[in-house]
Image (cartoon, rainbow, N blue to C red; front, side, top):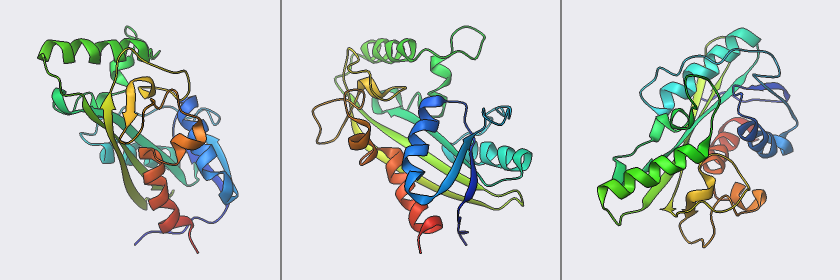
Length: 205
């Protein structure tokens, strides 16, 4: 049974500034004091799961246990049909530079373009998945998953958003998430879909 979240402090178990900003915007109307894992100096646990759900839950549990506060983790990624769903749960890792933790999504988008070219396919279908896990210090976890379908375009377009947004065009749209104003993207994104479920279950009346 899902648990209600009523005000107070909520940890976003992420060090990704773009993701934290987007989540803070989505939760803004609900009176929550949103802080990030980096604000609290919490380490990032190794993502050893084999699914968006497993990774979201392990990150949320780790933050909740360390901070002693409800914690929300988002594990999201881009799944490309012609690449058998890759990069999927490895979306952030495709952007890693060298052996460090620095990420460059330009490199990751270039890799997708190269790998698609190598398949000699004309199939550019793709979708974003967002798995949201909300964990409490006592171990309770609620999970929600959102999705948005679309297609890829190259070269990347736009400087809004983050990650793979500049190469993704949602179904029914003519511009990429990277060209889209945040408010418009928030209304249709995979993260927005998952958040609608979370809000209904955990923040609704």
